[in-house]
Image (cartoon, rainbow, N blue to C red; front, side, top):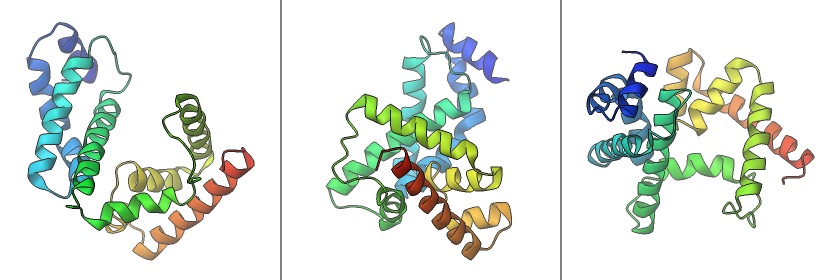
Length: 185
């Protein structure tokens, strides 16, 4: 079933929408959750919470891309669960190091809670990403949005792990310079 038909099922409040979403997007959402949480049980709960949140938010939201919409939901739910695990000191250092790679560019005093500043930062990062060659953009998004490991990206796109690491380092440096030029660093 195509995404538009699934969205229509949500708008009709037909519970078949949940079955269709799970059938079509379970693998993607499970992968994202597992990359963040590194725990099958927690990941499954995060994915189930994703279906519930989709049910609660569609309608009124009509996503342009159902896959992207669900990816953002599962990512945010998984990150929230990760933060709770971190607070309880039951964490896997893999995600911490991945997030630290990008966080090093952001000023320590930056208050993400301020929505206007956050939107401006997101818009500038999106502009930066649009200017990157497609291959570099994909590698960056796979690493920092989907939180794929260097090894997974390497295997998926046929580059060496060293090449992926160097590419990501260069992109982060370019992003830092771009954000500094834009007055955001």
